[in-house]
Amino acid sequence: MASAAAPPPPKYFLLEYKYVPDILEKRAPFRSAHIDGAKKQAEAGKMVLAGAFGETPEGALFVFKDVTREEIEQFVQADPYVQNGLVPSWQVKPYAVVVGPN
Image (cartoon, rainbow, N blue to C red; front, side, top):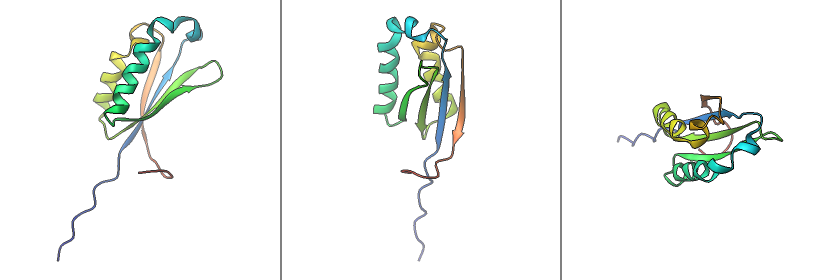
């Protein structure tokens, strides 16, 4: 009797943004559209968490689930923060979840 193969575990990626030093002064015209883009990814089940880090903040982290690098790159290119120079650098990294929901 053959048993059904278990589905593969979810695949996660981190997207890390580095912000310009004066992000708080520059983000206002773009913030709503930036957050809306992230919310759409979350509603589609593609983004698990997102938020800024650091006191100032100095950047942001986004956790994507079961997406391709190309999908993340499309998200980045469509983000008003990136389009308007508030994110001078970003990178995508595989993320191996060891503890937490799978």
